[in-house]
Image 1 (tube, helix red, strand yellow):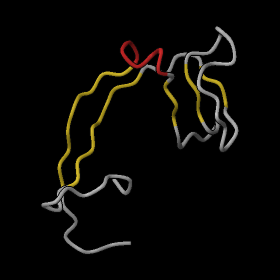
Image 2: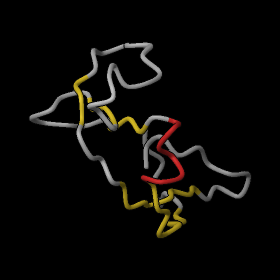
Image 3: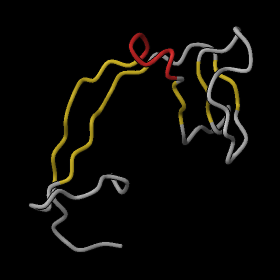
Image 4: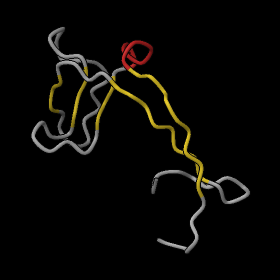
Length: 80
């Protein structure tokens, strides 16, 4: 939610998706990798044991991501 840019009316939107991760590979912070390192991997993560960021390769976008909900909200208190 903190990454959602507010619209002109102050609303923010987040799309919640179901994602099939498959076999994942760990990627280095700041990596410019744009595809799996080999056919064994489907997608990537920042940390295999404690993932905070998930990377779905563009070749898998249409088959591994299912948008399910759009959440619209406004902040009631200005936060940084």
